[in-house]
Structures are given as C-alpha cells and as structure tokens.
Length: 126
Image 1 (tube, rainbow, N blue to C red):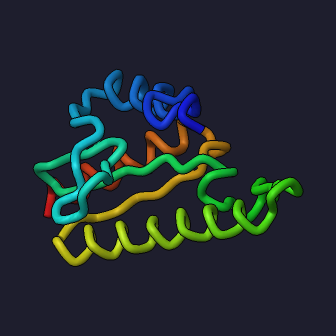
Image 2: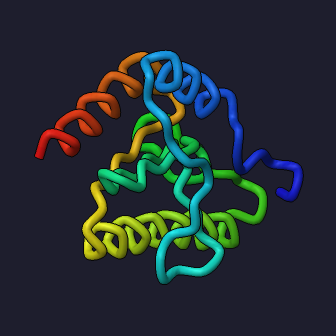
Image 3: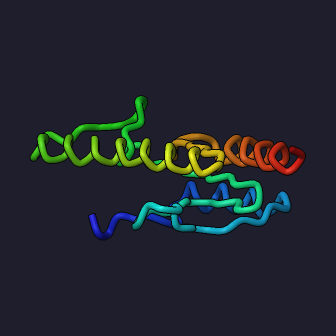
C-alpha cells in the first residue's frame, strides 16, 4: 500500500489542469483544520471550498468498489474505516464553514472542473 499513489493521481491532475486553464488558482494538499494527517486534495481557501477526488476502491464507490477475497475481514474493516474517515472529514470541514465537494475517480474530469468552477464562482458572488 505504500506504493499506492495518494496524491497527484491521473484524475486529480486532469481536473487540476482544467481548473488552472480556466483561470482558477487553488492550493494543493492543504491540511484539514483540526484533523491531523488529513489533507484536502484541492483547496480554495478564500471561498472555503474543499475538493476531494476519491478512488473507487479505497473509498467504497457504489458502482466500482471491489472486495478482496484474500484476508477479506481485514480489508472490510480497513475500507469501512476509510469511508468513516471521509464522513468525519466532511463533517468537520462543513462545521468549520467550508463547502465540501466529493467526486469519484471515474467521473469525467471536465464535468468535475465545471461543477467546481460553478461552486467557486457562486461562493465568490455571495
């Protein structure tokens, strides 16, 4: 698992390129306030928007998640903890006044970038 990419994944890079090309500036892998060892994939600190691009396997995508058969109990607990951690992170950020946007790695990067752009524009207008 230590070789598994946790940042700068292909979907993340694609979304970041599209956001940058459309004129958005953001921060990468910012720490989640009050929660150690957790980071926001793409952060817009001014409008307080946190974007997460979750991997289907690691975060339990309802469409594409698979369940390993070898050591199944250990994997089930691990993946359940990941999902619980995601919920806790989202709740913490929402309580702190952040808007949390979560996307799956299989979603279209252009659609993700468009939704993020709309959210950032709306937050800046408000």
